Image (cartoon, rainbow, N blue to C red; front, side, top):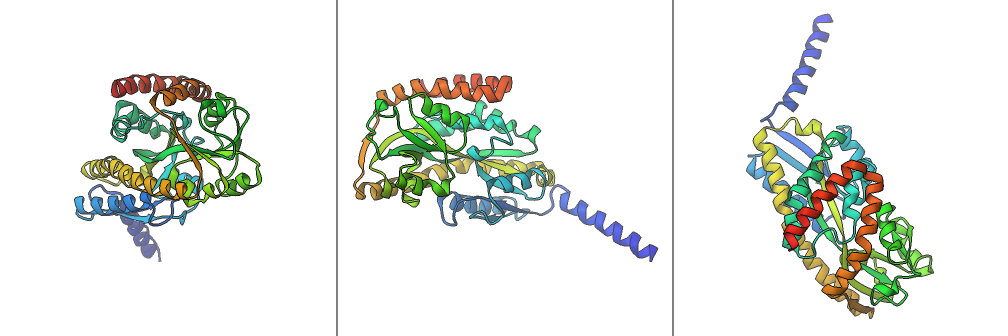
Length: 336
């Protein structure tokens, strides 16, 4: 019996070693909250295929859409604890895990030009933001675009002066609250699933989301105005568990990182096509649509950015100030 127990113990140790030795096959479960077939799901599955091909099958990612592995918070916690291998999660949902990621809530943080936005993601600023996850129990390998946000409302919404006195739904974020306070509007945190009813019943006047989210959730059915502002982003972070990551060879780590970084551009392209289709659907519903020109966008940025930045710094401290300083230098270089 003792010999059997010793053999069983040895086999368990050997199995653990085989699962974690670099260079051997690694199967991973990757979860996200979007529905199957949506742009993020499409590009995530494409990334899994490319990674399997480039690593000769050593890294095998299985994609689980539609919160099959849990909601955003549950999956993020599981990755942090090593109970799940990876998650692609909206940055707005994980400020509690890393306060620095709330920098992505700041309006007009990314240029509206897709190429410039991707330069910023891959820049020294983007790398510093990803690196900030390491001491918090994650390996962050890429930022993935989720689309530029626009405003809708049941009250007149043609320009910056029309925000005053209106009530807008937000995700629960101090930075987003400050964004609206800067233009005299009131922000109310409301769960995403309750937004349609809140707009319909007048609990809030308006909301902000990418066009494809507005169309998919049918918000345009209960809104009268759309202001094409491209003022903010829904950005995702690709997070791996250090437990899983430590089992990859250096070459395979580089391959995984490269594929996810490169495919940010592909996701932006697919999302862009969805945005065009969504805008046509919204137009067909008869909304009054206005678009900010470059000068009006700059005016809105001048009002919103400083207030939202200060709200971010209140919660992120000295570490946040270093990141803001880095961002502002890189942003100036890219957009000049």
